[in-house]
Length: 630
Image (tube, rainbow, N blue to C red; front, side):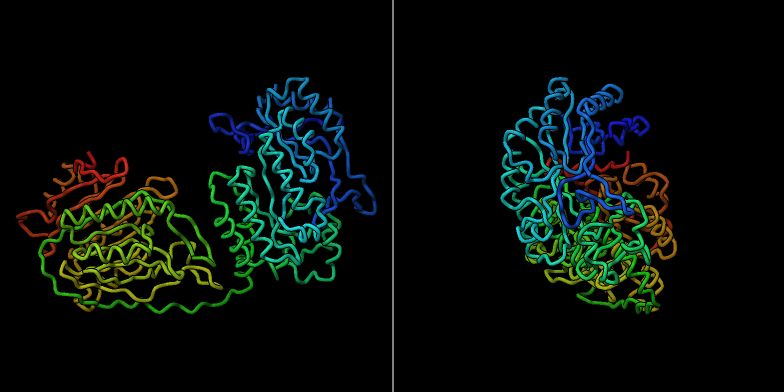
């Protein structure tokens, strides 16, 4: 290795030097870092690893430990510090401490050269080599701030099956010493190992969660057991090739033996052979949910990419193997549900544009999305309902995915005078919108999945609701079309042969939607097509930290009043039938005329009156000016 030149990191974009996000400055900015090696090889004999002490390749035996001299390593570090200005170094040796005397000399030279004051550095290690306090103290004094360790499983029986040198005792002792000297720790966890019980895997994540809480672990990487070429366990598995799943059809351990080791190990082929009898999608989601359940500190880096990639691979494979003609779903049934006849000519509506975000929570726990910061969103929703009650609002609408099932009973009891269209939440794989009318709850299930959730394959994908309702109430007649259901079903409403369906007063569209322009263009066209209903669209302020919004009311109105709404700042310029649009986290409260259909000529008065606006500031809703777009 002494004959190798330093890697030419100067050819990389500067951003690539910040991929090691464990190294940060005092202000939390990621430091520029490069990776180097002091030696090749590993003295461990883990069953799953192909980097054994002596490696047989094409009938040639190689001694697996090949070391650079200490001066060569020091020169290489200085090269990167002076030429690239790096602030961190990561030793990518399989196990940094293979020879304690060598490491001791290297630490002495880092101190002597002054590099320990110029850089932070980290390395890969095994737990059993980090139980000596003298060694750890020396590493810390030489500038080491981070180490990455293969914990795999916190279970002595499982570690014995793997022939890992360390055991639970070594793991705990090492974590305690590293914590004492302020060295951050990242760990790799290994799932899907043969003959290991799920209980051991869950206990491992539980233990890691406790160590995260105690600030003894700072990064968690989830790995899947793979049959790597020439590892001990792969050689023992040759007679069971048919049970393995490979990235390419017909690609097996046996026909990979003429390839070089770097094509078959670790990053060269993560998923070339995992055992589908154990590693299936349900199992992978179970791991995901354990991690989310036990590792509460979301500031800790949790790397799930291998799990995500394996799920994607399984889905692609299943899709290819199981392609068949799917039976078309029956058309969504639309029924009239009469509560009471209409009693009002003017209806006061409130649209609530909320700033909230969601987490993807996959099966088996629940499908699709769930609210993040639920308590904060609940505070916003209930305080909005209180204001709406004080303002004598008749119908209040919230965005898709902004609700939680637990709130419904309380809302039913407290707000019996209003109709509440409660956004939606996922339940039993349906995207469900609760509709509360005079203290009674009704439900609409989304019929048109968002892109990515189109199919129901082997328990995955959003289930499609097959029934919707036109509600006849004292505040008029309305239908709720959740997001993409608007595109799919609105023509079924506007062109219905049944006049009782066609003559709706409000089409309410709760959304969590990035493509708001497409929806608004269609709403504008639908107003020209059928001038009777108002279209109420309610969206989130931001989606994935991108400003979206678009909460608005479309309706047929005389041009004179449309110009006035624009001049008064109720809506952006250039829209034809948009009456008013929210901006930011906002409640819009307006009276809408449901008696006069279409545009009266000549216009005697506007169809939208008594406009109020509340914005969310410093944790409360505050009445604000209504000149939103000026």
